[in-house]
Amino acid sequence: MSMIVDIDDLILHAENNGDDKEHKESFLKIYASGKYEKVSELSALNLIEQLRIRADIMEMLNIGSPCLHHYLPNWLAVYLSDDIYISEPEELLVDVSAMLSPEAKAEMVEREFSYSSDDHGEVLSSLNSITPIHVRNIIAMAEVAKSYGFNGNDSYSYRMPKMPFATLLAERYKESMPKLVAVNINIESFSDKEILDDMASLLKKWRSELSVNEEKDCKGISSNALRKAVNNKYLPLLDAMIAHKLFNGAISDLVILDVLYPSLDIELDALRKTYKHQAMRFSDVRHVSAWKRTLVKSGVEHLTIKDALTKKF
Image 1 (cartoon, rainbow, N blue to C red):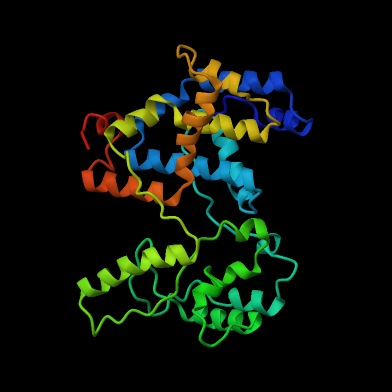
Image 2: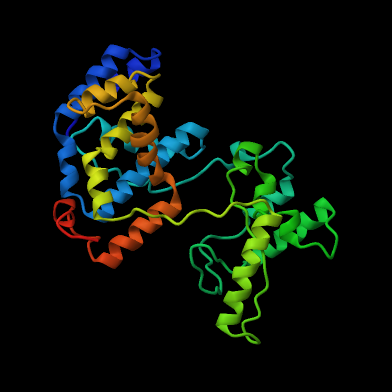
């Protein structure tokens, strides 16, 4: 991997509140190098992963995630080089204290993180939306119920429809935690159909009781959508969005239009509401999972983008 732009020079400009001209010229040089033509050499699965990593980094920048410093060095090194492949951090050690609320009790924090990740335990199978409850969650739920004074006849998830760990977090992190419902399912006395019928009925009631809207299915995942991701240059677009955020707004939307889409008549509003919005969908776990399932089911996950785009799925 060779460098297109000197990393020390660029960091120096960033530390000096950003030199717009320097960053614009660097972005022009990076894109003009032809490095993004290597997208066609990635496998379909790798492209989705590279889009996900960049969208995740952008999301981390937006919320000020404590995980960010693990990802930025890898992104910056690749951004300034002739390569496009970003590796996941090898060791992701997060300063959890930065995410906690001032009211978080020391004993609750110790309890939550006192379990060894090396001990996998005896577990039942799980899938995307369904995970059998671990013992540590039951212990934590009991502690939360006692701390908040829940009634013994309360439905736990009516009073606390989030995982117990959420009670320790600062508000900005707490809001991003998904709402969950803890249930008992009698798999011995009822048939699969009876259980699924009950679940279908209860889901509607639970969503109403907890004021949770149903997420729409991830649609529009196809060979045409893959072609659009390539033709609309989502990979360099996400790099430009990160650079804009990181380098004090130096890579403006007008610069993005001039560099990435010089021959297209795209309005600024369309860039923000369509191109950027679609690129950022790769920060959505459900969207990425749906992509991976579709690619595997279609048998194109290991094909290069160039070859995958010759298939219809």
